[in-house]
Length: 305
Image 1 (tube, one colour):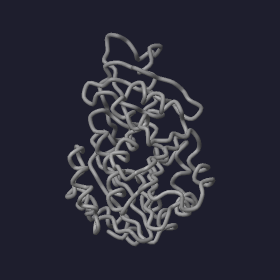
Image 2 (cartoon, rainbow, N blue to C red):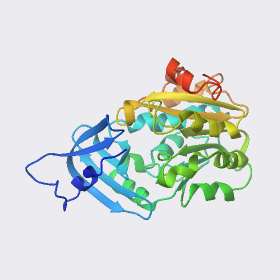
Image 3 (cartoon, rainbow, N blue to C red):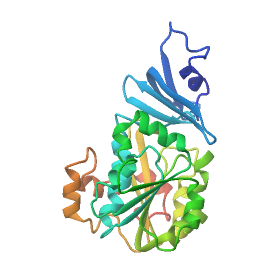
Image 4 (cartoon, rainbow, N blue to C red):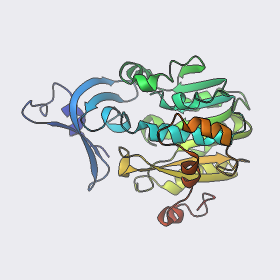
């Protein structure tokens, strides 16, 4: 949940924007818990046809991008999410030539995907051009992905893009979506993942963000279960992202033939390690070790539970 008072506090015309009081961004997780950041300055605020897009400068986390008031990325810790969702599947696949990123309009996932020289083309399908424009203007370290010569940017609905893509078109599909509400809801369905499977080449992998293990708003077993409807093997991967709800996040790795860490391309991984802030080979393997409470939540759904 998100406190509706805070987005208005970011605007200059708000009753809460009194110069005598500090402004705070607050993402409300539930009636008992919220995450807050001190706001130094609002940089950008626009209502797109899909969602509200805000960028602000915070004291503790640098520049922050939020969609409908929900945290998407910050200067301080964006690398954790983008490195893990990208390098894990790409270093397991033998030679990923064509990669599709669904969502991810900030460009961070593209940036990491294109660190792999074997990737000939990375296609980004983002529904909201306002997100891409905001990233290019306010997040240059992310936008290098958007401006890369091997990147192809498509503005449109990810569900429709997948539905209309040829069979076997991509080696890896990365679902870098928002939460399963609003524009992102269709990107979590079993029907969608079956279409993703159709456009994967033999040996293909899908990697999808799957919410916080501590979150009770969504049925986590259902989120992973939808992946299981399409793929033989599904694994849960976890990592620490301070600015995300509860500071602890999960991703789903799914494939009919690939294991997430038994056959990592060690030569490429060692080269990638020189460029990363979070990812390394040990983290790659260890991220699939799940705590018992998460094993219990995902029992009979993911292979590593």
